[in-house]
Length: 215
Image (cartoon, rainbow, N blue to C red):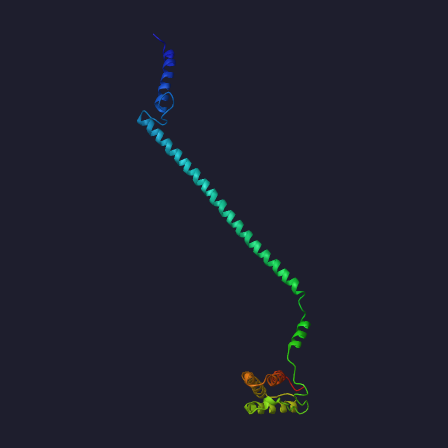
């Protein structure tokens, strides 16, 4: 009788070879995944499920990493675009400031505004003592009579008193001058160019002078 240990040593390799053949489909390994029993099939199926779940988790993790990297790249690109825009704006402002030169002082601004302001009536346009206005011929037309009466009276009073003491009368005088000037400009096509230029120059000085005390 063969000893049990020797028998086991002879049988185990055969069983192992048989199981290998049943699982791998023969001695040459074809038909991977073949199971000879229901238990082996269930085990193989469970292994496939686990392997599929692992692959899914790995793919999901990779996708999450890709999304996060894309989000970071988008934020970085947006920040870079904003920085570039502000940098270009600063450069443009600096260039404009350099072209403009130093900002004018308050005294320079005052002088510029004074130069731009129209001139007051000169001695050829008004009598500095009596306040009598020397109207251009065009403005002696009858259509301007209502305005001239108010203006003549107002400048005479201003010359006598040094200024118009009543606020209401001062406003009436200013309104009369402005209304007469508007009436003249509406009739620009009715007059000869030279006559209109002379009358317009007078009214421009008058509308500025009326807002001051007598000189």
